[in-house]
Amino acid sequence: MLLSLVRHLPTEWNKKQLLQGKRNIPILPVTEETITSIQSNLERLKKQPSFDIALASTLQRTQQTAALYGIQPEIDGLLDELDFGPFEGKTKATLFRQDGENWLADPQKSILRTNIEDLEERIKLFLEKYKKYHHVLVFGHGSWIRAMLSYVQFGNLKQMNRLTVENNMLIQILVNGKGEC
Image (cartoon, rainbow, N blue to C red; front, top):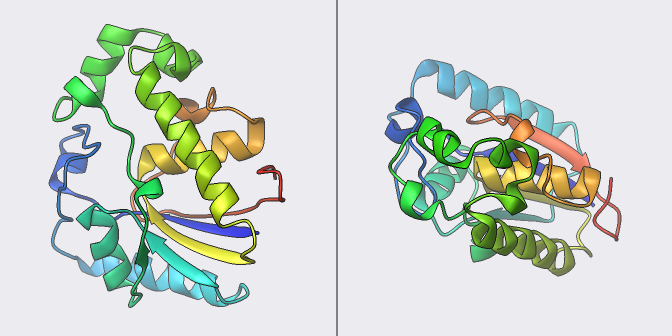
């Protein structure tokens, strides 16, 4: 399966480097630069086989992004962002100060370990649910996409917080039936 992963467009909280998690934050007003970036991603997508299904999370920022791509996605809660619990609305630096190296070295040992385990379970369920599709287009979230990449490439989420996924970045990966590259 080819997975085309698009992180949602920037929000005010992204701009302030605040953790959004499950908060339903809208995207910022669209700029010319954003339109150009969307067009570039659409051109890349046109060079691939057409997608069988387009998906977005239950949060409006992914749905608003899909709409700007001219795509009406199906909504799936498996795509929802990591729940940052008490850190939602706080800076990433606050999380780093409290969690130290665990957040980078092994998120499953971090203070958000239960939420990370839930995210990993949703990644596995997603791969099982959509494994028969040839090309899946996902409008998702930063932590969810990083978790997917780490899981597919390494078989776990240990590397997820060492990866970077910018807003509106398009990442494409091939996944075999076992959830590996």
